[in-house]
Length: 186
Image 1 (cartoon, one colour):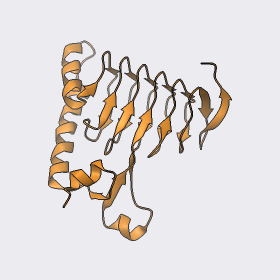
Image 2 (cartoon, one colour):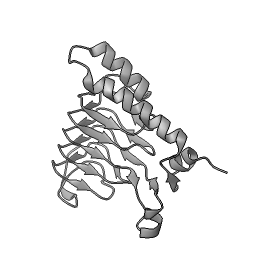
Image 3 (cartoon, rainbow, N blue to C red):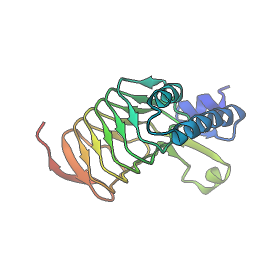
Image 4 (cartoon, rainbow, N blue to C red):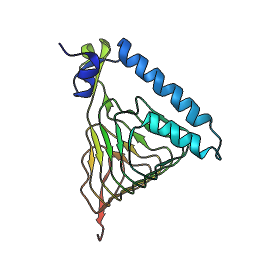
């Protein structure tokens, strides 16, 4: 029988109040508190905290606090990635971020979801759908990325957009729901 963590990582329905998952979220919250309370000149401390919180990162990761996530270990980040202030990643399943990706302030990445059926939802079960963001993507401020979305390389997402479905490479998209505005030259 699968543990609640195994169910979560596979995208199945799981109980988030499970003891192991609760312990791991508390660990992440404590690391986030250290990160978010750190001073701008504590670069080495921030780097060490991020290595512990998000072990799967490339070089030159810069996260401008405050930053929030559920676990950290489900986030995979490439090289030269920048998160501006107040970003949130609900990493109950895999969140893959390519190289040279820029996140504006208040970007929300939501792979976590709840059942549409009210009885299942009332039971407290939840699930997740992985999110993948390609290389050289620019995500404007206050963008919301919904569960299961894939964003292609070199795409630009306009500020305030709500991304509800996959976005191809080399496009500028914006709106709620987000739609293609124009093709970009690669």
